Image (cartoon, rainbow, N blue to C red; front, side):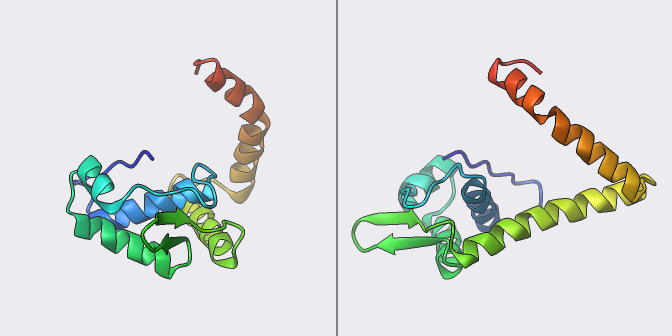
Length: 136
């Protein structure tokens, strides 16, 4: 599991961990019933206190996105759950909101944005093939 912590972006570390795990789940990089790293292991990897990881895991568990098995670890919940679907929706809405705000500042119209989205969507197979070959 690849998580990157930034000390300069102003987002609390536990929130960065939480958000990145949510993204990994929503994008399918973490699968249902996949085991998450133990708290101490992840804390050592990220060079944070175990309490920081505990806080992130606790929030994920409260949201129904992960579950703990007593003595057996922490696992990703079924991503088809209503909570996981809402989280996926929330992630994409945040990204769209950021895109729209930036497009507004750059004086793009709704038609301009839709045109660019359609062009990028049409280019996706070509871009994915190039990425698979290590090109850009």
